Structures are given as structure tokens and as C-alpha cells.
Length: 212
Image 1 (cartoon, rainbow, N blue to C red):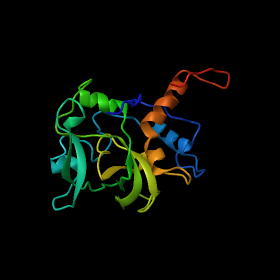
Image 2: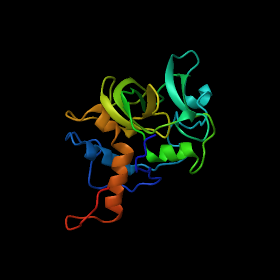
Image 3: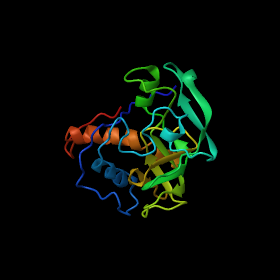
Image 4: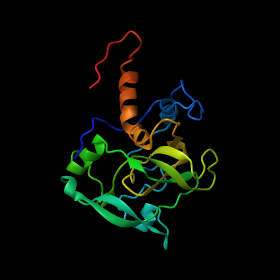
């Protein structure tokens, strides 16, 4: 039962300091591209994660007859014992989406709070997790910047605790050489939380900060 002090911003400002499509190999700069997106708690901006119950094929983006995969779902409010490993249909990437064969995922504080019932409880059973990393194994129509085989770190409203996860290609970023898959998976929520703490408090080169 891992507690990590990280949160998920519901709304993020546009960053003028970085190009999310830059090829400079700096993972932190690539993640700045997330600042151009509005985050909606109901997942309405993210096809494939609109539904709350993963066993409904229509809301999980699984197609009838698709392959099965393993997925962790929250079955009730409580301790880690309410997390259940189940079979679920593989999600199919829609237009503009990619699918990642997860090799590493992150456990974030907001997910632990949700499981404990601290905050709004989703309709159960519910998929869990937002941060994941691994190679792309399928792409949807219209995806050009990323390709099958690319090693990426991604974000989703739900569904990272799974063997495979779909997300818009705009929320997936190539992992630079020298950065492990595990390191990359730990960056999105925790990294953005740290960044916004600095950004919102106008921390500059003459500031003194405490890292906890």
C-alpha cells in the first residue's frame, strides 16, 4: 500500500516555454506539452475511458471477439484487498489513439485516496491508474507522430493498471535513451505535481525551496 504525495491537476495552463514535439531528448520538456490540454474528471476528452464499469465492452472500447488481457479493477472502497485481477477485453485504439503494452505503471496518491473512499467514488467495478510506459503495439487512424514499437510514457484518465492501455497520441511521449521504462512511468503525475508547485509559486533562480 504505497502512498506517494502526488495529485492530478484538473486544469493546466498553456506553456510557452517548450515544444511537446521537440526532439531534444529531454523527457521533462516533452512532458511540458501536457500544459496545452484541459483535463476533465469525467474523461470526456479521452475516447476509450468514458465508461466507469470495465466489464461493459461499449464503455471499455473493447470490441466483441477481441483478445483478453489482465487488468486490475477496484471492486469496493477499502484497502489493497479490494483490488482484483480480472480478464478484460483488450482496448482497441480509436482515431488519434495509440495502445501501449505496459511494462511499468505508477501508483499515485490520488488513486490510493480514491480506493480508500476519500473523495468521489467511481461506479464499481472501476479500472485504476493513470501513468504507464512501454512499447506501442497498435495505433489508430490518423496517428502520424508515433509508430508501433516506439517506447513511450503515457497518461490516461483510467486503465493504466492493465497489460495494455489506450490513450490519445497527444498524451504519449517518446522515452529518451538513457531513461528506463520504470523511471518514465513515474514521471507524469508526480512530475507535473512538482512542476506546478514551482510554477504556481513563481519559484525562480533566487528562491529557496524544501523538497519533501
